[in-house]
Length: 116
Image (cartoon, rainbow, N blue to C red; front, side):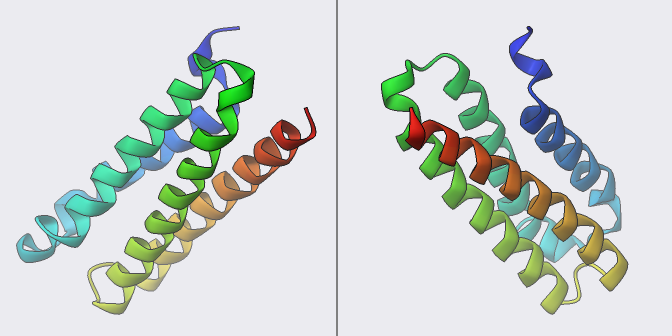
């Protein structure tokens, strides 16, 4: 199986495409602060997920836990974007539900890795 066909990577990829497409609606001030952090953290998360595929089994848990921190940061930046009225409620719900699904997938992967 291609490493990029992993469902969580596909979900994270789709999330990034959605925030990238929404960038044109972001006020200029927030585009270079909150929104930049959201985009950068999304890219780091994708990088971490890809790295896991190349990491030996015994060392995967640490990267998975770091990726969990990145997911929490994404939740924080999405919430901050909503609270500062950078995004509307509909967009907030859409992005938050995507991140929640990715978080659940990551949680399952962490549990599976801990059992091994």
